[in-house]
Image 1 (tube, rainbow, N blue to C red):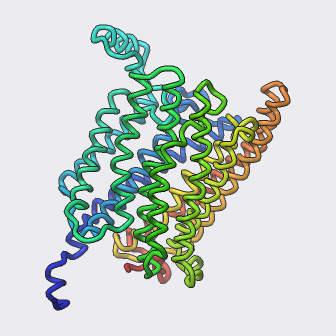
Image 2 (cartoon, rainbow, N blue to C red):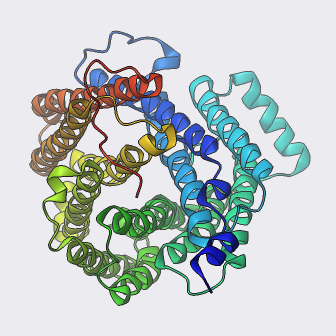
Length: 488
């Protein structure tokens, strides 16, 4: 078959991808990240008694802590990856999504879900509303706890959960259809994406319904731990690694180093990650064989992650200079290194010996920030740095602002990680020495002040990115703009 005939049969990428929708998802993701960072800064100021808005109930630390986490998970990360899915799945399958109208409906509906969740958290149920819900619960013989949810990362109002679950089902149908229609061998990216669609639906249903309406006591705690951890490992991780397997070879203009290692990483994630969640509840009444199983599987994941890192390092071999010259590649590989550090740290901190020292301390907070911002946000910003010049059909306004964004973000999150890890060690020793609680709070103040300035570094880098994006979209440039990435 001639090349001309082949080009007539294969659809153009521009006909497959709804680029406007990709931009909308990215813009929404950035808006939610701004909200989340605001909540994080308010929390940091509250701990060191510098909060200028102290005393305002709607801006209280308890509410904005939940805004901080939910806006990151369901606002920033979910929207960003939905945008990437709309870009990559049609290109990988050479098929359109099931319905463009459905895609726009999902976009609007998902923003409504996230905003209603935020409103429910900020304003909360009044006493009168709680009485009404309790009365309705008794009349309809519904499970108790229908009016509010006390599940970490699952604080969404009870009436949002069925809507969110329906939205996840529609997302799966919209993207699984073109994957099912595709012909030929399936690239590993699609393996990760298909698993994410199934795992995310099941994880959300498990974490938001079982602990509330079916399980109690240690059983609810065990499932809650699984939900917290599986949100990272079965929702964000497969979407992140899947996108990396798609974009990195394109930028480096070479195939992935080993298809076999990529499948080892996928099946290792599928087998070991769902078993880890109990490690959040070591030294609890949960049966010890489950705790031991979680410890072993957590350590095993470090080896699984090592195979993925080796695969990407092998792909980069011979092109190491691109980490310096190509900003998207730098974002991606920095996130990979942070991922390896995160999993190595996790393999240490889940041991029973280590848990005696750092459980409930700021060590865990530093760990969470490294994985959620140091890994997944790094990858997302790498994707946005690569895709925005293509989506806007304009080079970046300023390479210097792109550099500031990277270095402030990378340095800020790494300083925060080190600072909170050290704070956790000090707090653990304060508590184990049985000193009064106030002693640990006073001793944590220098670390919390450092954490606040590290957070301001991250926020400063984000502002550089927003300003750069605004000037790029407007097409204004005082000097010759430099494209950070060019269409491959």
